[in-house]
Image 1 (cartoon, rainbow, N blue to C red):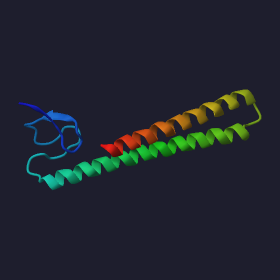
Image 2: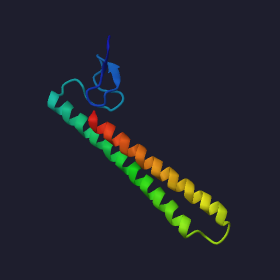
Image 3: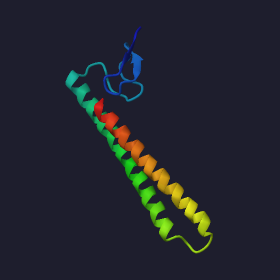
Length: 107
């Protein structure tokens, strides 16, 4: 028994497995074209998920920006810190997601 990579998700599985235990792709009885299509759909799903996370990071940045200029009247110092943390987290999250998306497209 040897360990191979799943054609669809790229994770390690047994060569005797009839389907991938990670992504559920059927390996026995399917054509190469069907496996390639499944791999393409898997990459598209991952890319969509990364784009959604990138959008959430933009929303966090925008919320921090709005909170900085339109903070509630009580505890202005606390709200200013919260706004700075939100902006920093949103910016860093956006950059990380964009780099991850670029690396995902290269595969």
